[in-house]
Length: 335
Image (cartoon, rainbow, N blue to C red; front, side, top):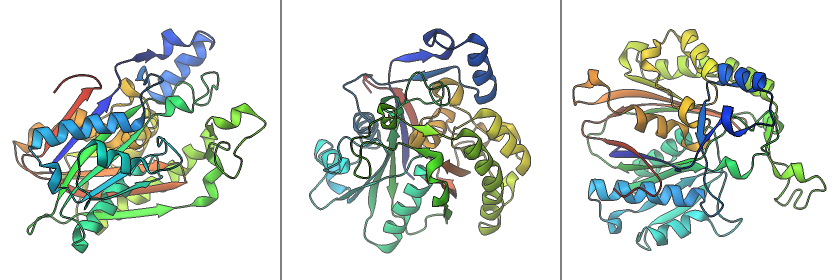
C-alpha cells in the first residue's frame, strides 16, 4: 500500500437544518444513535467516477507515479455511471492509463474496500499485475428518497483511490471474505435494472433498508470476523494502531469494539462528518485519521472491516508501510 486518498464533495448538508419535514425529535434520535450530524452530497452533474478520478489524480501526482506503469485498475461501487460500459474503462482513459492496463468494475457496497484489497492482492501475488489502483466510492444521494425516514438522514457521498505495488519483501496480509445472499432483500433497490426495469412504484428506484435486520446481522457476524482475523494473522488487539470499521452507525461501531475488547482510541470515526459513504467509508476514515502518533513514522498495523449490503462482509489485517501517503480533500480543490 503506497497511498490512500479520500475525496468528498463540497456541499454539506445538516440533518438538523436541511430536513424540516422530519420532526426534530426524530432527527435527534437518529443523530444520537447513528452519530451523524452532517454529510456531503454531490450535485446533479457529479458522479462516483468523478470523485474517484479526482482522488486518483491527486494520488498519482503525490506519488510521482507514471500512469504508463499501472497495469491494473479496479473500481468497486454500486453507483456506476452507466449500465454499460464499465465505468472503470472510462476511468482508464481519463487517467491516461495504458491499453495494457486491465480495468473492471466490481458491484459491492459496504464490504467494498476489504474485498477490493483482497482482489488486488490476489492479482499482484499471481504476477498478473505489479502496480494497481483500487478505486472505491459511492454517491448514495442519487438513490435515496429524502422523505424516507429509514435512509434519508444516514448516507453521504465520497470517493477514494488506493495505490498498491508488488514488493519482494512485502509484509504478509490476511483476508477473510464472507457472503450470505439470503439477506439480499434487507438492502435493495428493486427497480431500474433488468429484473424490474420500469417498476410501477417510483419508490422502487430508491434504496429500501430493513434496518433492524442489518443491525442484527452486523452484531452477530462482525465479532466473529474480528476474532478469526486475529487468529489467522496470529495477532492480538494490542498489535493494531487502528481498527477501521465501515461507518454505518456510531453506536454499533462502539458496541462491536467493546465486544472485541478494543480501546476506542484505536477506532477512528468519520461518520459524524460524512455519514455512511458506502464503498468509500473505510479508506476515507483511514485518510482522515492519518498515521498514528505511536507509529513515529514507521509502519503500523490496521484491521479493515466492511459489512452490509449483499449481505456481504469481510476484513483485512495488514501493515501500512512507513511513508505511505494518506490524504483527503474536497472535490474541486487543487492539489
